[in-house]
Length: 300
Image 1 (cartoon, rainbow, N blue to C red):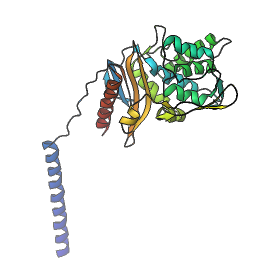
Image 2: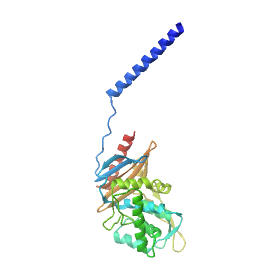
Image 3: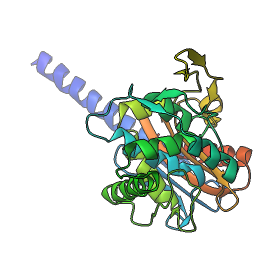
Image 4: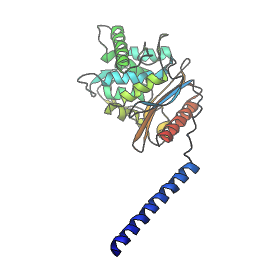
């Protein structure tokens, strides 16, 4: 009997303790609720951020507004190349004078490819995504487009870009170039470009390329010797300034202003986003940093 009474007393004490703990916990939660994460202000005209795990929106500012995309277009160029069946990344492409002439005529960003050199597809992808080489973009479009003339192959390649955009659900996007130097109708939105990046990042080769800070290519010259190219440095400064950054691509131009498609992973969580038409290269990085901090704070 005494034992039974003691057991009852023990159980009652435990119940009181649990109840008191619950009240205490409730009191703490009531007295100090979690602070809401302040929504950031960005200089970019539009911006979008999403949780890569479930595509849930974390931030949006003019996210469906159609704008010029600049060299962020090259994300799709890479995505189309990397989706080719039986792709051989070590296949060699001979650099044509047309690619060099195109760079000069458009005062375009360049991977400084040398006419006559043989460059692998893998190297062209690094030249495309790190220094944003429009010559590399041209070479890839010429290589992976179908047609009897260069113009026909390029047109076909751009068609593949638009087909893939539709498959990714990019409903407010149109490409009319392989590099972002459009003919008046090359546009997308912050939301669509974020979708593009999220899909592109599913490819292991793409992930490896866009997180690389610097890459040195060794090409084969006309005479068969090896040329060590000057290192290609990634224009995405977040790779050095923001811990956890895994890519993706910068863009700029008279119409596009300063753009950045970006992604980062922290504590096993990945967020992907885009800012379009920011005011400078440093400000677009600052805009992206604000959105990344905001996204990770919301995800906890």
